[in-house]
Length: 581
Image (tube, rainbow, N blue to C red; front, side):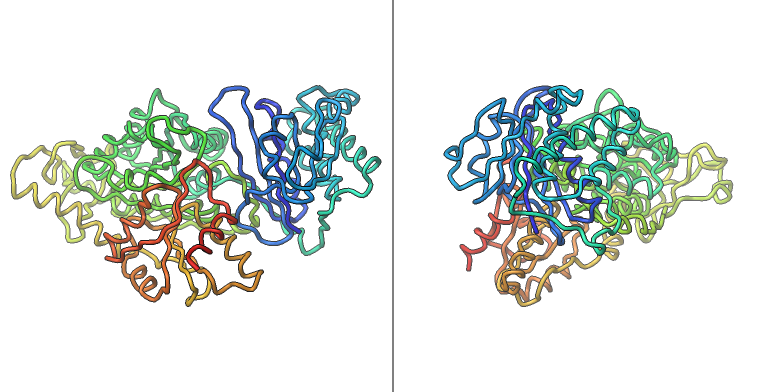
């Protein structure tokens, strides 16, 4: 069984909370679920929606059709009537507004439920209609309400038993109303078997980024709020004291990057997070970290530009920006996770890379990944072991040998020993001017050349660590899709659906999550065997095509692009592939 549920209404009336309660409820019952949300750049008001896909099998992305529409206002019906599938269920408050079968282009099933009336009868108000609707939804798909009750207890338990009981009563009233007035329910029902009760956790990639940073030993975090990385800020602010790191929200992004560089200079693992506009202010600081050879991890959450652009929507348009950010030539390491597990793993890896090679390291994500919720097996993250590699960090005993420390001494691999200031023998100068091994400013031509070559040697070293990218699917597929970051989920969902239809040999997928350094040799080998290559990216210019050509010499001509602020949907990818078949 597989169903897409969309909840829509005015901002401020619990739309996002409804979706989160639904995904947690279904996940607790052993089902797989994913949510994506849409909302305007407004403090209050405007139309909000959240799409929850639920299935009794593995899924990788949501799609753009709706099987069950929970309309908390008439506007939701008007805006999404063309998205509903044949035979879809429409759940709405029939005493607040009218909905007719003729409002839709396909046959639908109408389920009018007096949400407001039931909410008031059980001590609630207009803001609690959504809870009644959640109970009604579970009744429609014949899902045990006990899972919602346990989720409500976890969600609202800190507010007291009275709040928990009231919410559960409201949900029960909606559940009972459907069972009494529409006993046939809906044509999509879920049965939970014992095999499906494996423990799961529900989280966004923002939370996975935070977990990866904590597991890697991060001790300092600074960020100025900006969509879409705010979820990471909320999460880290809530666990900072418990997990033992310093959380700072400074006056702007310039302060944030410089604070993080300062914390790194003092010897701790540090991280910042921002989006395109905020990172524009961090660019000079990024270059400073490159000159100081100071490790810092930068979480970059993409959203559409230029300028303010679409603040609450998604894109993959900042790849070139990150690869070239900051004046001068210095190593910029870039990783791009495609799902929750990769967000955890690559963030932890970013800290190791930053310290081993003493250079700024990016983790490039986007709004879709940052704010979508995914159900994953608890063991997927809970059982991970994170190794911490701090590179050439000098011990206190080693520092005592000299009064001053040759922090930027020339070495065969370009990586100089790094002392911690404040310890005896650890004195050195961190200078934004070109400098000698002691950190003193220089303008000497030959030494300048040596220092630039020293820093760039690191790229040759880190390239030895680049793993081969994963090729999903059969090797001799008719089409090879090449993508990075958040395209992973939608493309894997396409492959799952095609395999289910007996067309598993139509498409395979080369997923790139190490962007710089790039797995050039592996990519060249894999793509040289491909029958037909198609690049897929959430931007206009197909920025990865340029990067692949630079790194491998392979020129990809066919492409699938999307740049309307929305994520890829599997159905539209399949349609695009058919044009090449």
